[in-house]
Length: 262
Ligand SMILES: C[S@@+](CC[C@H](N)C(=O)[O-])C[C@H]1O[C@@H](n2cnc3c(N)ncnc32)[C@H](O)[C@@H]1O
Image (cartoon, rainbow, N blue to C red; front, side, top):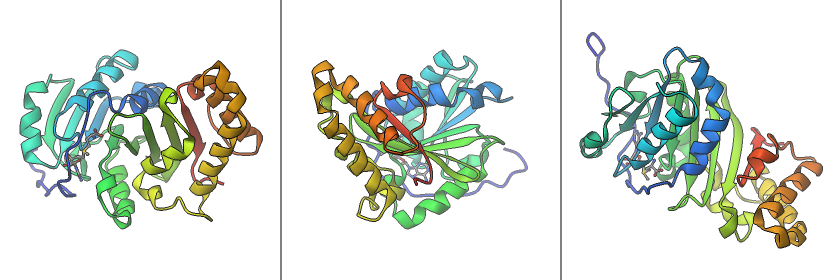
């Protein structure tokens, strides 16, 4: 970028663990709920920050957005580790998919959407607010950051949607056929929440209430885990939790609430 002083990428290199299809839950949610932001954007630029040892999840996000939202989406995978940027080069497919070195400052880009998954997990909780501020300050007007965590295979996941005003929603998502109990999601909360699953914290109350609703919905297990989840989420709403969306999202094994939690 001529005339622009190149800043050192903000952040540190962390473990590069990733897996094909690991981020399908958050990707499907992004396609369903962030389509308007992308469709309205003059420049449909998306950043996948911290794609890891291989760019497979960046390739998948671009494909899902191109198929589900708009074919001219431009995805830039940013990594702070130069070796991982070099390793990703053969997967590039410009102009729709490119890779570059960058950190929380987003390398001077102004994307409408940023997905940062399993990146902040390896930072200290005290570093999270600054990282959010730095990323959201770089967004295009009306843009959003989706920041979250999942397990190795993407069966348990959670994420926050964050815009210029701060976090707006929290989503929990699970593969229902392998879910023992919603309490398992506590281990995969975003970094800002993972140490908050203790009595007196709203996220602890939420996971307890969801677990109680899941237990109460046990008779529905006869009809399969999806019916049980649908019943549990409905019950959560009936008991006063401001559950967002409706059955079409819930049946994916999702639960989204406004942030901050009540
Ligand atoms: C565990 S991998 C996550 C890979 C992929 N996002 C996933 O969820 O499967 C985390 C990656 O984030 C990168 N990373 C950490 N901090 C970063 C930062 N500030 N900017 C860009 N990349 C960063 C690390 O170098 C590492 O490759």
